[in-house]
Length: 296
Image 1 (spheres, one colour):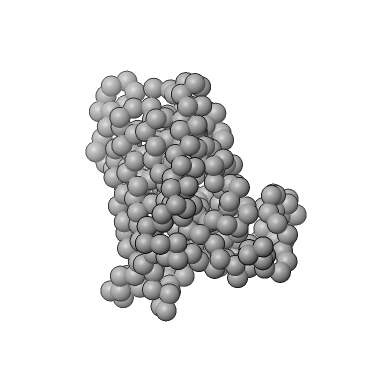
Image 2: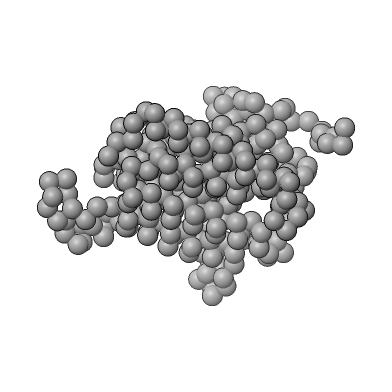
């Protein structure tokens, strides 16, 4: 069932409003206190992770409003909630004295029998992605005939990998103000305007981006793992709901290639050396300079 334009607009408004209200509520009373959510950004300045749970709340609300069916609503809820929950576990529980970097570091620790919060995140988001993919992938074809079990399982595995790897990739982009939100907008816009079943999820992403962008660019907030993983999982699920198999497989290949490349190449260095990417990446961001005096 295609989501109509009025419902897409409502979805974006609801997602934006819930994100803004949740963020304001966290300002008034942060779970565990503000200090628990404060980190140091690339400039050496304090920055809040509370954008993450606020964005996740907006995505969950928008996903329910804009879902094309019960099946779509369940798939989006499972994927987004898994990304948010296990991302927050890593945000708040990571042992910084033995930090593992990248997917390779977390998987290497798991192979040695060491379960880090990052490793738990990989397992949890992966499991949630597979469940979401299983729910989102119909057993019957459009003509009503039943698909083969092997074919259905292969589709679920590929779609689950797309959801999980999308969650991871967006998190890799959350290293500079606005970067992950801009990337999410780039993917969500054609989804939100397109005819597929993921249009509502695309509209929800655009709504939360609109609510979160100002504080993110101002370097007061950042998504953190909880927000970035939730956002990426929502986008991955939207692609699964909208796109035919060849497009899903192509998207998975691109996401996996970028993930593998991130283990060897710094995305920030590539962006800084590419004029167009550097300009887009810098839109709305304050120039590099001495740390701002936030007491003024």
